[in-house]
Image (cartoon, rainbow over all chains, first blue to last red; front, side, top):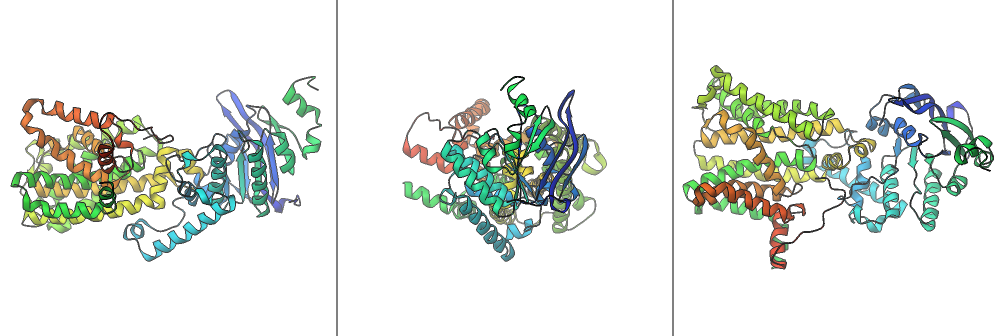
Length: 263
Length: 324
């Protein structure tokens, strides 16, 4: 999906965000704009601050400087759950699912806690409104599991799932939060070529539903096929941005990845 | 045999209810007292299950909350002359509020640091009870308050009904979004908050619920013994309560209730061993833990199952991703 690039269409805008860990500047004056309906990719060599950037956007870390705007509202300094409620969901680089819970329960986790929903009194007395809520959320979760193709594993313990399915489950869990922006942290890492193909189809399908996506990825074939726009960062700051075809010919990018004279 | 166990598992609540209702008629007076204490402990320990089993927050201050409930009840009745039922409601409310206050350190602290905080809370309460002599009676203890029912048997039945209600309520909470939120906080707090779980609110609710049940249990304790002193609420007691949760499987409400009743009775059963009693008690617990049945879904029933299956040392593979 291609989108017009004007400020009304902005989903995510980071302005000069900086994060320091002691003397190390992990993210340095980073500017990223994600427009509605886009699939953007964030690439860079190992340790360049990609995951830190995602942690800043989702509120796991607080920015030292700079502004993060989501749909025109500043979100820096908010708690991670508030940011999730506003419509930013994420997956994790190293899979972080709840191993001893079922697939269904893992997905249900995306419904959150504290954002409305039945009170504890209703829960304990199993009131009619609570039962209705359970039916509704069960239906919702089942629909998403169906959408990503995990419905046959619904009652399986999550730790028994193969690696690729666990990645899909993380995406399903993120989708339950009803995001407007989905941050995928290396979704293709450790997958075989068939699984990568399925994953790319899924990401396209999610994007078609109007969810903007910011993708961190090391596999260039994935970035090339999915991303409308690519940001390249190195040592925490942006060194280039553009479409993938332009980026891959950029000498600064090649130098960051392969070193001087790498060609 | 397997079918029988399956049947027992399905109707565990009913079975426990029937056993508890029949028990007073077939036990001696002393055994009945131990059973009463078992039921009273079970109410308390189910609260601890919500906090520690589901939420993974270790609290060593649970005996202190028990004390707050018991003393608040006693003081309201003796010094303020309230009726037992009004005293019970106010004392439970007070304990809930104090327990909710305990949640605030847990926003920033976890693991051993939270344990130290709760131990500190327990000691503060114990020393306050000891030294606020005009109100609490100090080391002499507090007695002479009215009971909920004139007859102890009625108190017992009231406790059993409360316990049944607590079991059903806690199982529902365990399956609800709150229960899932707490389980997520135990396993991975970063994931929990990233998925839109208000971690602080969930912790606050877990601490409040567990304090409410501790307070209620403390009031029942006051009713059973008719006397209280700071000695009954040491941090060693808190350890025992924690142990009941661990032995109950950390996840199962029914398992926790059974474990609370058995662990209350076990020292009494072993009384014939006189001085080596505590040694044998610890040995039994160690062997039980070593055999790893605790990790199973429903500790007691898995225990029965494994006896029917095989005899001897047996360790199941541990669950990955479960940090409990």
